[in-house]
Amino acid sequence: MLVPNFMKSLPKAFIYIGCFFGSILFIPYFMGKLPTIVLLIAWSSIAVLCGFLGGWYYRKYLKWKKWAVEQGW
Image 1 (cartoon, rainbow, N blue to C red):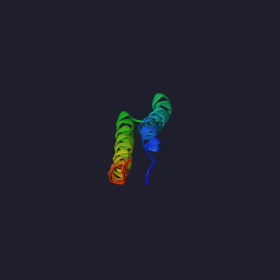
Image 2 (image 1 turned 90 degrees about the horizontal axis):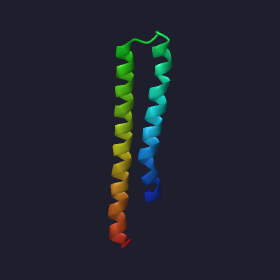
Image 3 (image 1 turned 120 degrees about the vertical axis):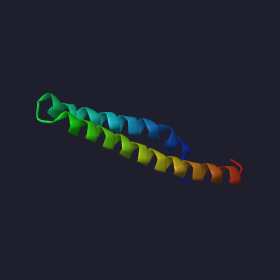
């Protein structure tokens, strides 16, 4: 089962990953080689991916929580 301490740090990891990849996109944008629409599409796809992964891991956490309650934790 998934360890709850891992779930406590997971949202921070998704925020850091999203900020890192989002900031990488600024380099070509300010150099004038990346149109604004591509920047918006990339940001939205990063947000959707982080949201999907966060929801997926949250479902695993809920599964663990149900198991923990059944085991008397």
